[in-house]
Image 1 (cartoon, rainbow, N blue to C red):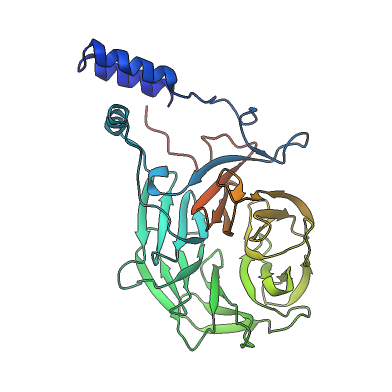
Image 2 (tube, rainbow, N blue to C red; image 1 turned 135 degrees about the vertical axis):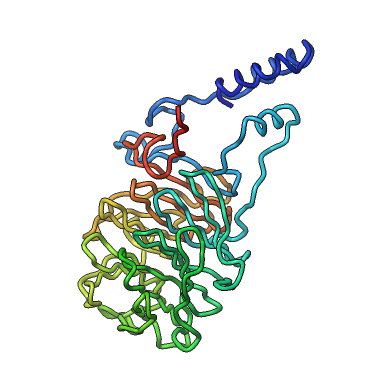
Length: 375
């Protein structure tokens, strides 16, 4: 608890409490842990990579429930100080994927059949997809376009549900005759096209990316087919669009990322099966940062690896662990990057989203920082 909060509470208590209660609160305040609030780089912060390398990212926070983003009122703080109760909120049951737009984080929750929205900037929370039209059955992959519209891949309905930034349903694309086993959706920045990854399966030959007009639902083209050659897929998982318009596809069963031009023509690939960094073991989701770098979540490694646009490994963040904690993961899945460079990394097992801030970005700067109160 910060010293300013304690001081404010003492001011209120002087008019309400007797000497005995004030003495008790003085003892509690003396036991309160006060963390340093200085700039990034203090010894108490978890940075990546670790010393002696130059740090690039710092662990900022974990998000596990609505209580982690909704601002506390002074009365709530006062009540908990008196009663000892802990904060509570709407939690994540089984998170899978994430997408972020200017500090508004959307997380698919397959167990609760909804998408949960955590607005870090405005400090509010709401749920998407609980009611018709647009009721969700098994939401998996997510994406947002430049306007913040939300695109949700519903694996059971085999359809894409589209909502505006505030969760109002706009339209539906797809149906059971169009997909075998869809797993993710990616929208072009202008919202004109969507790329839907059909993971196929052992008995299916439809391992591909299907491209649709995002407004009419018209099928435009398919990218790839089942196989191990250039431009072919084995259990594809996710797709991201680079700053140059190139398409980066996680080809999970072939342990690589394949690169295509905007028309779906094969260009290159990187990665292979292996235990060394730069290789893949169980790659899942992919994201592109504002710097053009590529972020790939790997469930078996318990981390995400960062590559440049050419596929050269730059660094990795996180470790596999059976114990919860910052930067520790048991079953990571989704990853997304905001326009300020903050990374949001989903772990299904620990039911959380970890946030990493670029080392040079101040904690109160960017889309992921709470809005400043007026003076």
